[in-house]
Image (cartoon, rainbow, N blue to C red; front, side, top):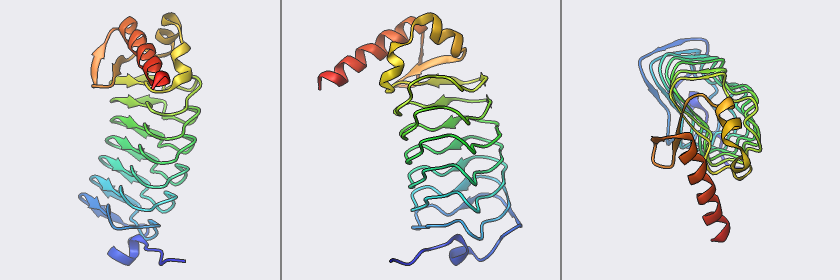
Length: 200
């Protein structure tokens, strides 16, 4: 079994402490955040590591939290409050349970294995991207999304009708190129893209 590299092995033990400013522990091959501070007064970067868990992650991050491109199967241990955006895309998540209670920016959970949005933060002040997953419904979609919304590349969702989608999602809809599109065009392009994908 290979050596397991922890946060404290690189930075020392900051358990229970506050880190002033941004904290970048990305691209280090970390397998654990043990020793990370409780509060980060800036951005926290732990992407491109070998993390399978967010145990020991900061509880409060003043700005953005980046944990994308790891091996996460759960958000257990994620910060409770993120003052900016939360980036957990490109992992192996099957659930959004334990997602931060408060996200004051966007929420990016695309490219995972999500079958449900249960556990998603209730209020998203920025963009919400749940595209490229295995969602079968939009139940548990955040109650408020103040930015745009993208649920493309979830085959089961292409069966939604216009009325049903609009009742569920009140935010601007975005697709593929992050350009806002009207609901009718959104659904039309979703279905067209799905047919192209099936025929490949």
